[in-house]
Image (tube, rainbow, N blue to C red; front, top):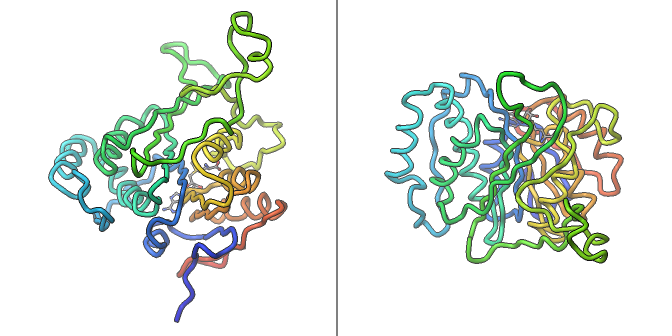
Length: 295
Ligand SMILES: C[S@@+](CC[C@H](N)C(=O)[O-])C[C@H]1O[C@@H](n2cnc3c(N)ncnc32)[C@H](O)[C@@H]1O
């Protein structure tokens, strides 16, 4: 019998290949945390992919494959071809994310202002509105400033939980921030810092930063560490199936979590090899069926 690409007893793993067929082979409920940062411009080639449905464990969520979901999809995509492609690409992958989260698990979906409103509607339909936990604004201040509108200097991160009655969240373990008005609080509080809110001020990966890998869409490890610290426990499995330079792996390794990363781009695999092989818990690299060996 063929070995599965991954199982919960595997070591940290990076898989080279298209994420959807790989996700479909993974056992249900295997991950405590899924953090993804998908590309927006997926191109029309994805158009051929048909909507698929996934059998839900409890089978009773409104709109997962029912009327509401299909009506929403129809209404939203009727007037916008680009969005229709985006939906066809992302929706089956988000369905897999839902299937793969365990009962206390959380999804962080990293987007920007162009996509976030569509994706919120998509996730409300897929997960259920009651499973929406937060919209995090990651604010930074870098680069050129538009003159004809307010310069856009933030990304949006949608946070959904599998079960709103029983999800893991521990912000006590998260790095704290300086108070904006330290004169208004006690010196003890100033020394400790404050708990972050849903607006995270964090610098982008600067050109001269030590963590910089050269991968064009690399996100700061500090952002990912917050997600990992708050929404998983040491030893838990975390997943990023749009892994890029492997930032989730770097964050997870540093915080003693186990990770599975998937990316279809050979450059991403090469960057992850350089970045993660130097860590104390380096991953094994596996090629999905039909892919060239990850090297
Ligand atoms: C925005 S980047 C992720 C960057 C990442 N968060 C980081 O910090 O480096 C999106 C990634 O998704 C990958 N990707 C796009 N379509 C994919 C697919 N169908 N299967 C697997 N990976 C895919 C791209 O190769 C790219 O590396």
